[in-house]
Each structure stands twice: as structure tokens, then as C-alpha cells.
Length: 77
Picture 1 (tube, rainbow, N blue to C red):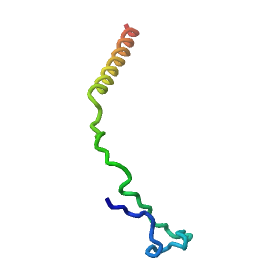
Picture 2 (tube, rainbow, N blue to C red; picture 1 turned 90 degrees about the horizontal axis):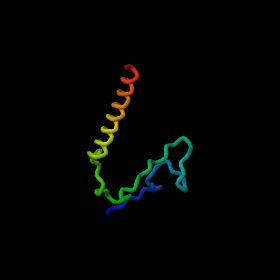
Picture 3 (cartoon, helix red, strand yellow; picture 1 turned 90 degrees about the vertical axis):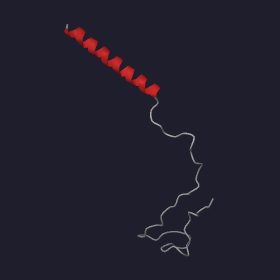
Picture 4 (cartoon, one colour; picture 1 turned 45 degrees about the vertical axis):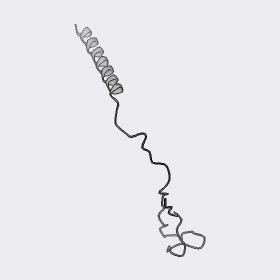
């Protein structure tokens, strides 16, 4: 594994003052992230919704719609 130092090198980076500061009006060097920040996640792949919870949500939605339809029909008749 290789590690890339995220700190700029003052002797090779233009615009840095002694101590690593940036003078007013100058853009600071871009931040770099650590490429080896954490373990690779392979145990939890995204597959979408499971069939059980999705079926339960659809059944509940149909039951609620049927209840309101029956209630509306009882008010009309």
C-alpha cells in the first residue's frame, strides 16, 4: 500500500508563506484525501428493496385505498 502525503511541500508549492500560510488574494492549495482511509466494503452490497417489505407496503396501501373507497361509497348511498 502506498501512502500519499496530503501536506504540500513548501519548497515546491507556489504561494505559500513561511509556516504554510497563504497570502491574501491567493488561492490555497487543494486538499487531498487519504487514499487508504478505510477498509473496502464488500459485505453489504446494495440490491434495492427486498420482496417482503415491498409486498407489505403495497398490501397496506391497497387496504387503505379500499377502506377509503368503501367509506366514500357508504356516504354516497
